[in-house]
Length: 585
Ligand code: ARG
Image (cartoon, rainbow, N blue to C red):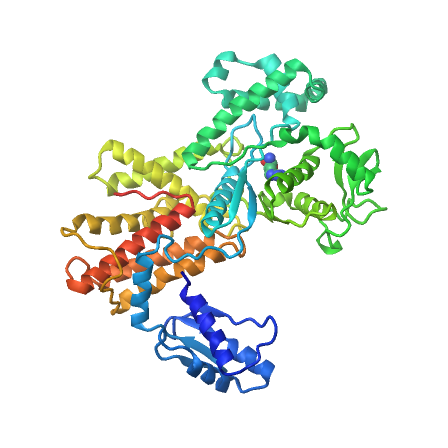
C-alpha cells in the first residue's frame, strides 16, 4: 500500500508532466508532513525550487501545479509565502485511508523496493565477565534496528561477535588453576569467573611475576596447550549460558554467535596475504596497515602520537610478539560476512570510543576491494544522576542483571498502587513487562549519540515519555473492547471520519508507514519512539473528545476501528522496539 506521502509525490509528478514542464535530471519532488497541522497535512517546496530552475514565478507555478493535481484526495490547498504548497487531505480521503489500514496486516508500512542483505553486529560482550550496564545500549539498539529492518523487508542476519579470545583469558586461566572455588563455580559460574578475574587482575597490578605467569598461560592457550584449551572451552560454555539468561529476559536473540575465536585459523593466511599485496608492512617489529585516507588531519585523535614517517596512526594486524589482535579478527570477520552471507551492509553497534578502530577497519575493507557499506552505529554513555558514567558504590560498572532487577522492582512499586485489581502472579509478570520495557524505551527514546541519565523513577512513571505510558495507552484501548457487548466487524465498511479528534488520530495512524522507513535514514530508533508518543497523545485527545461506547451507528463503528488501529500500531511499534504490551495494567 502506498503512503499518502508517496501518493502526493506521484500526483505532483503527474501534475508537472501534465503542465508539460521539463523536470531536470534527478530533480527531487518531495512532499513532507506539515510542521504545523493548522496549515495543512503535508507540504511541498517543489514549486519554489523548480520555478528557479525554469525561471518562472514560484507562486504562479505553485498555483498551476495545484490546479493540475488530481483532486480526489485533496481539499482546498493553500499557497503560502514565496510558493510553498500546503496540502489539506479531504475528510473522505481520511475515511478511505482508515478503511484500507484496517484491512492491511502491515498497517500501511510499505515493503522496501530494494531489499538488502544486512548483517547486524551487536551486543558482543567479552566473555568470562557478566554483562554490565554498558552493554544495554548496543544490545537494545541493535535488536530494535534488526527488527525494524526485517519488518521493512530487508534480509537481516544478526551476529553476536562475542569477545571469546581476548587477553583476559591469561588471567582467567591463571585464576582457574590457582583460585577456583568449585562450589561457587557450579552455583553461579559467571560470578565465580568474575571473582577470579578481578582478584587476579588486582594481583597483577601489585606483582609483576603474576602478570608474567598470566601471560604464559595466554601464550600456552594460543599455542594450543590441551589443559588451557579445555579450561577456555569450559569458560566460554558457562559464559554463554549466563549470557543467554540475560538475552532471554531481554527477549533478544541472534542468528549466529560467531565470536572472535571462530576466526583464529583465518588470521595467519590473511595477514600473509595483506603483506604480500603490500597493504600491510612492518614498522617497529609489528605488521601495520597505514590508513592514509581515513583521517583528515583535523580529525586525527592521535595527532600527537603520530609516527613521523606516516601521517596517520597505523592499524596493527600482527603484534611484535607475533600475535594477532582484535583488528586482525575484525578484518577476517568482514571477509566471512561478505563471502558467506553476501553482506551488502554491515552495521556495527558499538560504543563511540571504538570509532578509530572502525574507521581503520572500513578503510582496510575498501582497499581490499569490498563494495559493502560498512557502518559504525555508535552511541554515547549511560550516566548516573550525578551526570558521571553510571557506577556502583564500589566504583564498578553495575551488572546488567542487577539493573534489570532494579527496574522490575521500581515498576512493581508503581503498579502496586495502580493495579490493585490484579493477582500477585499477574503483578509479577506485569512488573517484568513494564520494568524491562522501561529500560528499553529509555534507551530508544534518546538520540543514540547522546549520553543519558539513568533515572529509574522517571523511566517507570506512568506519566511522561515512558514505556508505561505507552503500555497503558494500549491497555486502555483493549479495555474498550472488553466492555463492548456486541460483535463489531472491524473492517472498512461505513467508515466516516468527521470530528477533529478523529481526523487527527487518522492522520497520526496514517503516518506510521511514513515514519518507520525513516528510522533507517540515520539508524535512529528514537524516531519511532517519538512517533509512538505522538500516537498515544493523539489517541488520548481523541478519546476525551469523541465518546466511543456511547456513540451509535457509523460513528461508533468508525471510532472503534480507530481504537483498534491505535492498539495494533502501538503493539507493532513497541514490538519493533523489542517492548511487549500487557493486556491489563
Ligand atoms: N567485544 C567488543 C567489546 O566489548 C565489541 C565487539 C564489537 N564487534 C566487532 N565486530 N568488533 O568492546
